[in-house]
Image 1 (cartoon, helix red, strand yellow):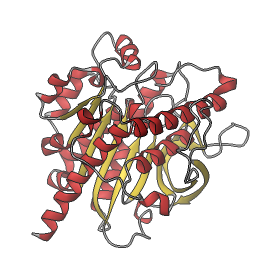
Image 2 (image 1 turned 180 degrees about the vertical axis):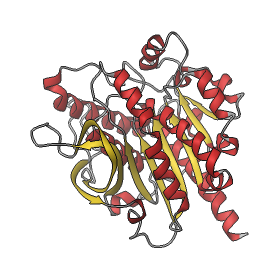
Image 3 (image 1 turned 120 degrees about the horizontal axis):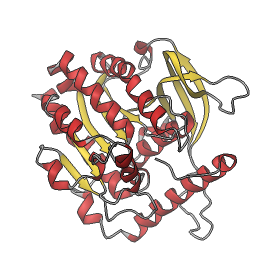
Length: 351
């Protein structure tokens, strides 16, 4: 969820928000936040990511392509009759972008420059040399296509990911008051996400598929993994790597039921929670008072055999819902989860 904003100031407010996020992430790195030991786990060397060498991400979206005059450059908020595939070219921030004035909070961010359409899923990875991992980002409520694509790049860059980065973008109205539309659009998109995951795990060029999902996007991801595992079983369990659920906007009862249905995939889940996530508190009220997974107590989730990171003390803002976009210690948690599955893959390959 995003904080309320007047429609005419969306662009300026979004830019300001991203600048603040990046600035505080930089400040956190410099000052070594008190939560470092609690969140970081094993020491992780954050080296140069592939995205900095080739700033291109893969795109799969169920959004309708934007029309002239709609105020969006590539894809809009309406539901498309078929999924679109593309490669998106981005421009990274300057190399010294972390040198920010905390007084002004002005800073350049990733920019989405252009889209190259791709006809078939099998064509997305044709230029890949050898085995590659893929990191898929599934966004949450109140997002444009452009912000989702940029967030995918920021996460990949933040965790120093080696491999291909993809954004799966479902139709969001990008409006604070369209939660219902967004929630239904996310669930409507699960067959398309299933197609993407199925194609990736079947590709000879893909070693492991890692998923980072946020908010409502976690519900979409969980339901998709459930139907994928029911159909593909051991193949899905072998090729799906780390599954990161950041601030999951999922009913606890529904989530508990799904965890029991996905077999060994459940052991690959890391949940990032915050009991003071105010966005999820609102979502709980809308859902009839049922607690959301992202605001649950750590112990309740650990009893399911899941890895849980309680980020309640790491927030700085009003909502505490987007911590995974800005907190370097949470980036380390994500990277550690990914590295664990990459190492596991290499062990099995060499044996």
